[in-house]
Image 1 (tube, rainbow over the protein chains, first blue to last red):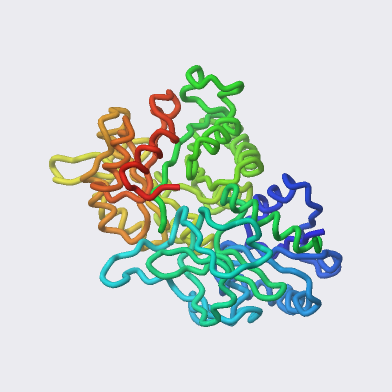
Image 2 (cartoon, rainbow over the protein chains, first blue to last red):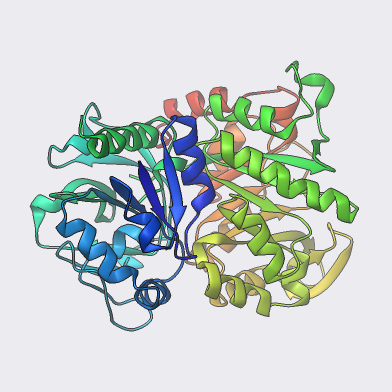
Length: 207
Length: 252
């Protein structure tokens, strides 16, 4: 069973509907006692990093998430939920993240080598696969739907499973051990997104 | 590289699509969910639903439509029309929409953009602008209430103000070009696209695939929206994309 961690800042509806369409058992909750029963987790997120971390911490979920990761249960962060997995973010002032993956969340530059760049990075962009992972099994290319203004700056190349070219190399899929993340919304990224969700379910189910 | 987006727009009234019903040949062509699926299969990159319900009941029905669309579709969609408050935005976004589009309400109360962007993030907030050329102004003027009332705002200035307040995208409709099928208003699009740092969706005037190419190349648009040419099957999303691909435009 998969648990969607509900801390009031996610597009829960479309993620849960996507799981329903795949006939996956899931629960949506913010209560540790309920969440604890799950085999794997999805951390969604739409909005600002600082607000999200404040709410997570206040709800006691920061330590809960660190605990389940230490127990080796799979975790998938989506969009802001992926950014929260990293060390810190410069959005609205420096804020500490969950530090489950190494790297910093920084603003997408609005100019690169004299060319202006539209921010948010909004629309369909193709993935360049960087490292093999069970999350990307059977996927060698394809388009995903991005909508974000901040991206992950990391020196740990092995955590980058796929990137998208937007003037800068935008980390699109990340992963290390049992912790995964997608910058795009898989539930809004057509076939490729659903394939990634299916792979994640397989990871959770231990297939 | 990021692709240019093709966005069909569906007008929804009291829970039903009101344009082009008899021309579509789908089993239930008046059903927004069926139409949304049809456009998804055709390769639409995104959808816009415009709620033109007159009644309170109609608006409530729209929330159901949003839930059904979100349950069935794996592409993003925007909902506009009648969104006047943070509460309205919450209802629509919680029902599963990815973005809300603000038009008249944002002009009457620009603070609404700031509040929405603060709460949901800029990526959720689209500001729709209805623009008409004004001889006296020597530029384009912003209109409200579905193009009925002129405002004091010049289009580029309003677009910049909206972005400053947190709009993540501008949906720019040329009232002069709308329905004419002679092409998007390229000068207008270029002026706005070069003046703001967020993506701009060109709208109004699409008649054929070449018009989309011009919107992207000359008009500097990031996405282009059309309604009737897709609804009336004068062309299809697929055809437009095949053409753009041949012309070297990066599309999905």
